[in-house]
Image (cartoon, rainbow over all chains, first blue to last red; front, side, top):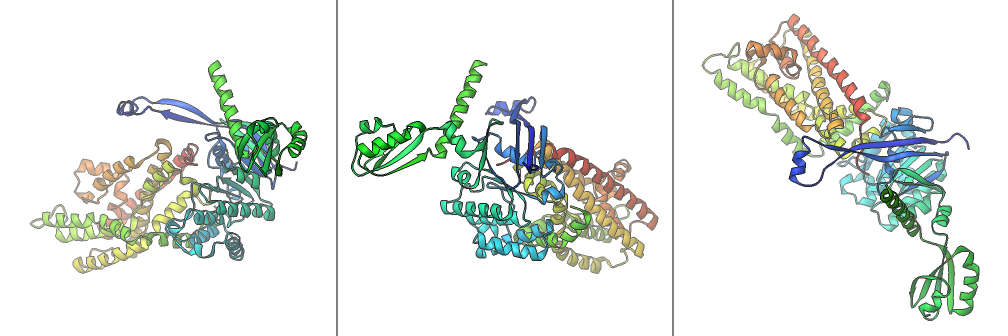
Length: 337
Length: 267
């Protein structure tokens, strides 16, 4: 690989948190004595990302995905380990580094609340020292791609969540960053807006070659935008590779989706494979990968099949199983301890 | 951001800061009304001095002093402690940290952007003051006017940097609003905002001379009302700017160390 755009070696980020049980007595006691607890948000992860790659960080809530993103963008200092983004140490927050990156957080905003988004665009132009002709061209492109229209002229506080998110993305890209950190960029958006945002991000990456690192709980985001996933759980990296391969490892079975011309009893279907669902219109069966061909042949020969497709298990189920296994393994370790 | 780049971005930063200020006109008016304590003290001390002067202050002196105090307060206010404390606690400081502009510069511009509006309030008061007490109390020499302008800048810097230092404490404590309340209480009493510093007992006055509060309000007011000769004014100006340098250094240290602790709360 060429020199990586992102290089992370043995990254650790630990927080000291003071826990306190509920109640007035505990609140009063905490004035005099607090019980510190070390939370290992990220506990020794290492990976590299090449220029132009699109990578998804996956993991359950509290896994350390956003913490990793914040370390990469320079918001947090690592407790230990080395992190480099385009040869910069993010925690130094050099101007040259900050001008190359952008971090879009679905739950935070940079748009000025009381002013139209166009003012935030102008502010970013001045701060990032974007030449005026380039700024005008960029704004025109973003307005068209994101269908902003006259949204940029209305005070941010009057915009809907989806409209704000589009304007947030535009504001984040005024300076044409080469590394995009996106933390749940489609959270809370309706389906059509999610599609719009995903299409735009992918187009931006393909057009500019920007490196993209994304966290999302929506598997559609991950499937549409990323070529590679890094799974983080309890601060530890548990998988780094292609999404398809992850799905095969966790859920190697395939799904047969059958459209049936007439109802078939469950027992008949169970003879072919595990029944995931069945109704009057059809059924979904889960079969081992190596059995797909013979089961498809038997189904076509013995059942009133109108249509048949072979699919992987939905990513949501794959992730759910992955996180469940992880929780079970941790519980075993804790019980043993 | 380099100094040159920051300088080039300033017109846009100020324009947007001003636009944010005027977005809520009622709030602006409430803020101005909340800083009218000097006018209340004017009425109080004028009444006290009705029959006999208090120290060197007769009624006209008190009128001149507190009108000058009102004007200086309008032009040197800062509120970054509340901004910083809030943004640290909610994690929204992240948005400032992601930009290639030092957050202290953006806070400074936002605070300074309110001055044009406050000038609109301060100027009529200045005119009234001139009409009421005449111009004989104003500085007589060009040098003293320069000292006044520098003292105004120094006053704002001490106020802003003190706010910044206290706000930065939130990186350790989560919130530093109560610390700011303590500072404000000391400011009210020791700066000359409520009582001219000259009227303090000698022991208190000695302490006030070495604390920064007097240089936030009292000193510029004293220069504007010709309370000092040129030599004394220059000595006090040097003391004020020593406090500016100390405050600058303190904020730098607190900010660099505190940023390592920033937890960037919120997803």
